[in-house]
Image (cartoon, rainbow, N blue to C red; front, side, top):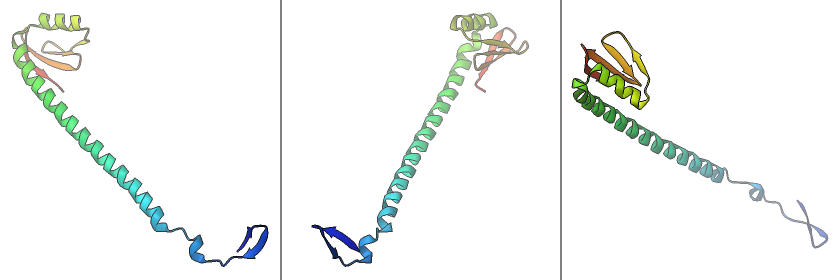
Length: 117
């Protein structure tokens, strides 16, 4: 290898290991980045699973509570409340009514059940 040093040309011994970049260092950095990404994904998926589980429990609790609270509500009460809340109402025959995303089952003129399906 020729090198210019102090305006003189001189030969410098060439060693193969001087040009060699350790693939282990590149692999180490790549593995560290990959490990971080996998760890980050695992944490995100765990958080997402916990959040879905919590939301499912909330929906089940709301369904139980609404079914009990709405047992004495009439169709007219339900329609009036939906109008005040600005929710869309979809009539599905005499016995079913959708208010927003809630499915109400009626028995006669009274709410018999609330379904979150």
